[in-house]
Image 1 (tube, rainbow, N blue to C red):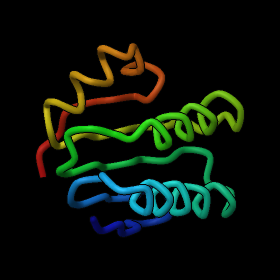
Image 2 (cartoon, rainbow, N blue to C red):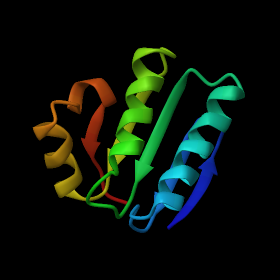
Image 3 (cartoon, one colour):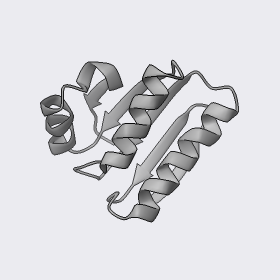
Length: 99
């Protein structure tokens, strides 16, 4: 898994988010943007078909408690379907995208 920052408010995650260290890395990258004063974050997840619960919980905290406007762009339809089943599509601003 690789994370890169694009501009001042977008994170791009390539590869599958599957380990605890991957989850920690995603959370730390998001927190760094938030600590820098960003109030609207675009999270582009290019390849992963799932999100660990730790990442979902952190995203919920960012949106609900920290009032960050999140836009999650999923490159895999299965991730969109998962977030829809969890009723998080609207909260996370989820949409399917292509590279």
